[in-house]
Each structure stands twice: as structure tokens, then as C-alpha cells.
Image (cartoon, rainbow, N blue to C red; front, side, top):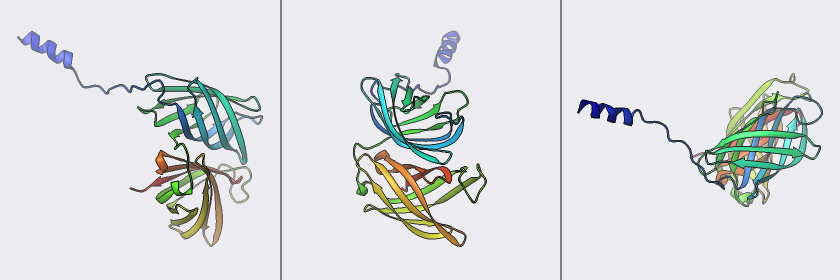
Length: 251
């Protein structure tokens, strides 16, 4: 009896975390992508970068994307094409090539159902990391409305005339979007206003007033709306700074 009981205890053991299981087509469709780190794409070696865009994973294993990438102050449009694989353990791999012939390789792990994928670049001497988030099929200005927490962080580029290249900075506050293209930004420095335009592909152009000491400025961002309008991922398009930002809906 004691032996049977012991065997039962050994068989039960300690509970283990259930492995994630994904379906073959869980990542099929459109995603917003946000990246930050360093890249070797282009002719200038390793460069700091921040990127934003829209990626589409097709039924046939093909991937297409249109991204906007800030490469140490150069803000460039970057259409890419490539291939991807995805398995039932939720592991995603994709390789893309831009119009200049530069190739990048990425690996990531999806949540069950494929709503979110954490990714990283695997090419030597690179440090790009980021996220893929499912984006709606179509958007309009009214798709982005409500109160959002706002956070932005990054570094000064080679073109910053006030800070040394590589100097870190961050901005935090609360943004209210009215659904008609207007923004109000509240931070510790005070209140400012801004505007946004959301295209049908869920890509947004944003200008947001910011206060710094006794002066005011304009923060220029390009973003993509994801998670059914509950999150907007963005990258700064100003050549002086390399930064990523998030607008996260408040509950």
C-alpha cells in the first residue's frame, strides 16, 4: 500500500506550467510593429534606431511590411519583403530584405492566439528588440479616442544641437484624444495641445506640444494603432532624437 501511494505521488509530482500551443494561422494578418535598439542595416555600420510600421503575414509564408525607421537621425521609409515560419509552440521566425538589399533576421514568441509577439533581431552585433501587436483591419480618427497614459524614452541623435549624442531622455503624462484629430497633453510641466491624423491602415501622424523649462516645442511622432484602439505604438520622427512611445488606454 505504501509502495502504491509512493508511486502515485511520484506520478503526480509538482505542477508544471502548461506549454503554450498555437495554431498554424494564428499570426496570419496585419500587425503593428515597434522596434528599438541598434541595427546594421544600410552602409554606415551599427547605428541606433527606432522603428514603427505595419507588417502583414500571408497564408503562403510571405511577409510584407512598410516601416518608418529613425537611423541615428535619418527618418526613412523602408518597405521590406520576406518569408516567415510559425510553429505550434508559438515560435515565429521571419527574414526580410529592403530595397537596398539589406537583410535582417528576427525571432520571437507569440502569446496563444497570436495577439502579441515579442521579437528580437538575431543578426550579429545588433540589438533590435520590439513587439508585434495585432492591428485592426481599418481605422479612422474616431478609432483613437479616450484618455491614455503616455510614455516616451530614447536618446539624442548626432543631429541634436542641445544634448550630446546618446544622452538619454524621457517624457511622461496623460493624453486625451477626442476622436476628431485633437489632443490634450497633461504632464508635470503643464498642459499643451496637439493633433493627429489616423489613416485607414491604422498608421498615425501625431504632433504634440511639450513644455521644457520656460520654452515650448513640438513632438513629432509616427505611430500605429493596435489592440482594438487600446494602444498606440509610436516612434519619434524628429531627426534630433531616437525614441519610442506608447499611448496606453486607461481603464
